[in-house]
Image (cartoon, rainbow, N blue to C red; front, side, top):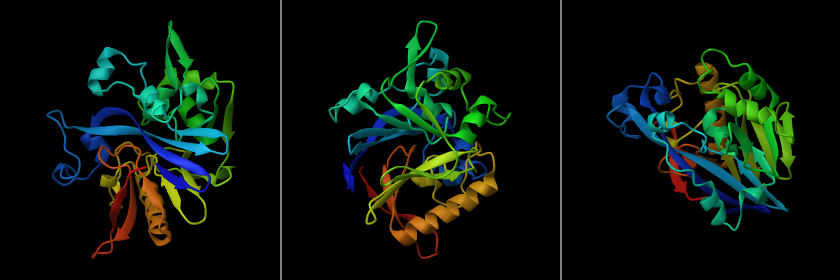
Length: 280
């Protein structure tokens, strides 16, 4: 647990899954990235979907929801998808899905949105029945009308289910959602991704979303094959990491299989690297 101002922060270990290593690290040679993230015989790397629970001021806010349970056996095998641990993780903090007041989505790719829904008959039903949901309007538009590169990352079934939610707020750019909690906009990975920043003026944590999904992605040119604008991604990551290093902010990793968060430093070559890892 980490305390920032009035908020208690908890990392939720929602699910394990695997993606193609080449896609996760783009043009970076396997001999380099495999030192940090081992792969299996099919070149898949194991990852986490971590949710960030923010509790305080009468709210229980969840950032991202994992992949969830609404997957065929074939896709479960392809993604090496583990059981969904949402209820167990929330119960560890005395909560149920019904207690979640707000869900902030960094973006609507299936590994960030899918856990918000569960199978119900021939369709899907919402898991967080009492929550308000927040996403950038530009990302919602991208999810409803995905380009050819991203079509596989936006599940039409999940996006359709999201469009039927009654309590949705489409944000138009950076915003302060609650006192001490704001969203920042990033466009390199997908249009309208939002990073969540929690700060009390002394201590700050930033949810890295898929701008910096793991500690293995700290090297500035190491971007994913999934990114729609790789050069924009590099520029955005460079600006974010320099600022976070200079201001002593903590970076939360959404997909790192080993580490939840890190404080940053510059090494002897001037590169920004993890200084110390933290448990949230």
